[in-house]
Length: 238
Image 1 (cartoon, rainbow, N blue to C red):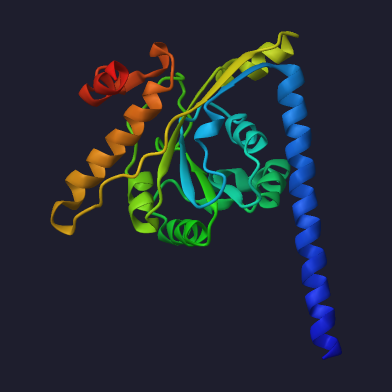
Image 2 (cartoon, one colour):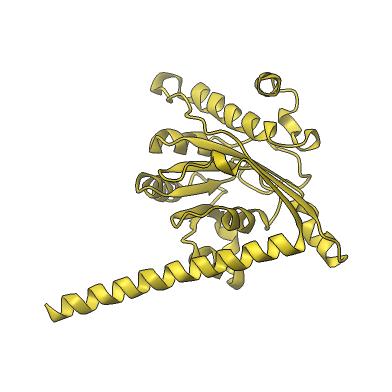
């Protein structure tokens, strides 16, 4: 009995320490963004206070993930992160502090997607970039179908997030300027189910829906390959 009590106490202390580390990290990150940039945040009230959901985010640079982390007050919040960053000790440490899920973006990483699905099923919030990598131009690239697949398998809603300004933020900071960064959280959407007989078409349809909703949260110059997509035009018109 004494051994069980000791193990339980150790687990509780570990959980409390992890929670405090996350809280401290969020506070520091939020302070830095607030004071070193001109940050504009729109649509935070679109985020559910509880329950699982996917955050589908356009990816401009390394500041995107800490920015989103600093804005959302959820204990169980993490992201899928490219495993190429495992070689960078400081970045690896930050990702591990928030229980990030490492993924090999050069192949269909079934294990990472399975871990992500289980995280969502357990009530977590997961951030993911549908494009799969950072956009070198800042404009939207064609998405992969992983987010649509994951949303279907975990049966969770998707919240589109449009970020602008982070791609040049570090450069502007080095010039002693406060970069203008804008984050827009769109309305939650529950995508239609993926049918087995029309799997490829359904995945593409849902991927386009996600990306067009992200594009609708962005300035026109960021919309890239989705600029003239008919679904985006419908969303903008409404």
